[in-house]
Image (cartoon, rainbow over all chains, first blue to last red; front, side):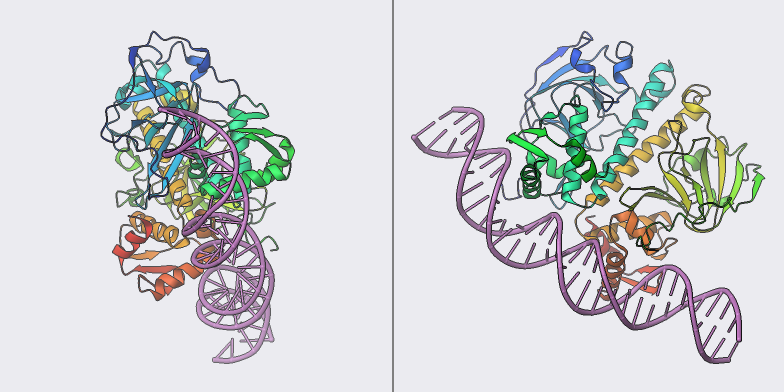
Length: 248
Length: 248
DNA sequence: CGAATACTTGATGAGACTCAAGCGCCGTGG
DNA sequence: CCACGGCGCTTGAGTCTCATCAAGTATTCG
């Protein structure tokens, strides 16, 4: 790959999706209940009444594209297990990852007719697809759904602004520190983190290069703030120091 | 100011607002009709039925705070004339400007009980304040309002993501080029731009320093891509070059 | 075991930040 | 009318962080 590994998501371009399809019977999957406050999608509290009905379960292998930027937005999705990334490709070849979506979270929800971003499987993962019914149906109708969608979008907005803040934050160390805490919160606030994504993914999420991500993690390790038992495992030894670094 | 000019927004901290208040009679102000596509807040098309009724007109002098981060979100606002910025202050003293709001645009709309950001007058400006009626009233009720609010929030989300992209974009020149085009679009797509905001504002919006903003503008001037008849006026001589720079 | 892939580490350079000084505009006051 | 000071903006010199280029190591999978 001569483009610096940025297009890892574009695997098997001409190939049909490798995914199995089955009708969902609204399995109230334990994974759908986010363990902590950070997984603050209001989904969990309304799962029984929400769009768990009539969904289609899909499986994706790592790096598999779920939909592309510009695709017709026929569905939105809920993550059952695994991790999904939503991202855009800039015309200079860079990739910008907008968000990582973990179990229980919803992505791919659009106001317009097409998806503004691409969605790709980060790890082996299972999602449920729901038919988009358009803005009309969202807002009017029951009112319950309307409230949920509205709340969902407002949460997305808050998260997007949080991400902006992260991107504008000065140093690589600050970004990495903030990122680690974000992941820790979303994984249940344990000090022992499993990173589901590659260094490249982290880099594209934080607006850094893969080398800087690696170096910064190594430095935090040397400083004793974190430990790296393996590449994809991180132990947060000194969360106070991390908080200070990231600017609380 | 020993904090590098970052807290310019916090003027007259202990002082009462210098603003005149009067009841709005839903003046269908010509300024409220955004001239181009970029001013894409769906307000304009529904102004007559939207919250122009029952608003309170407020005037603010430049740098005057309209509300602070964490203030109770009793109202949201529509800009009648002038420019407003919404921003956050980081605990390291930096300021992050989330957005500039021009005539006809709405800001300060929150799902929660408090404002997530502060709002400040960039220039002399007039806004109309509307009582927040809570999520319930937004969504249910007429349905017309619901659609509007929903659409509004989705637009905000798209803009926030666009801003993320801008922040993650590599070079200062790219950021400045993109910024100039954004302003041009919102001011009516003329090649002659009036910048309502200071260099510091631009810097805090783009995640740069005031010196880099100034230097980059000077460089674009020297390259003949823009002209700077005065500090707050910019002429876009070569919009094709600008587009190329910013990455289309 | 070998090859591919992911990650780490090193050396170097470009670009942005920092500190510092100078310029230009504008309002104030003599 | 001009002198002065304040403020916003510009410009310069030096430093430092991060991107780039280039190996080298570890891990996984056939």
